[in-house]
Amino acid sequence: MEDSRGDIGDRVSRIQSEWRRERPDVDVQPQGIIGRVHRLAAWLTDELTVIYGRYGLGEGEFDVLAALRRAGHPFERAPGELADHTMVTTGAMTKRIDRLVARGLVERREVEQDGRRRIVALTPAGRVLIDEAFMEHMANERRLVDELDADDQAALEAILTRWLAAGPAR
Image 1 (tube, rainbow, N blue to C red):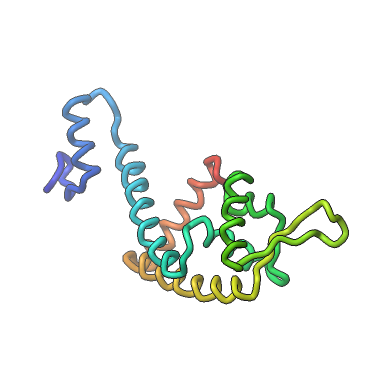
Image 2 (spheres, rainbow, N blue to C red):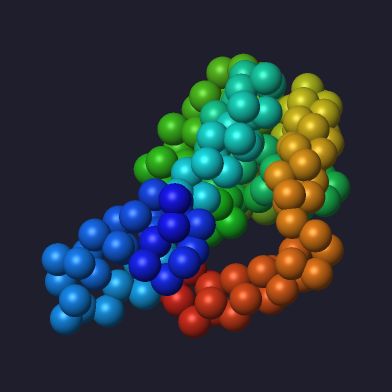
């Protein structure tokens, strides 16, 4: 299906065509980008969470384990630091940590020099799990981005980096 500009039609281009017909006074060009990015994000999330599920993890639990693993030895961070690294509230982080503690993947410990402060650390079982899950996750991401050639991948990364830097989620 082609829209009025001769583009092969997808759902977004059909929506834009309808708006152009109904509201020719409104510039709907941004909808082509935002609509496709939104749909792409939903599809990518679905594709990524399949891998997390194989390890009994939700997206949030994977993020916590990954943030701890990226911290390097001894694989620990303060709960507030984890919240910053995963862009969630401290309340949401507490729930994620509780679930991971219950599974024996992380533990809460007091900071030696300050008994009032606590840290969250990967357990040996948590490190094994995140290392395995991360390897499969990266293979899955490679599969997804390989839908584009190397030049398109580089261009898209540069564009998204600039756009993200201009927005609030820096």
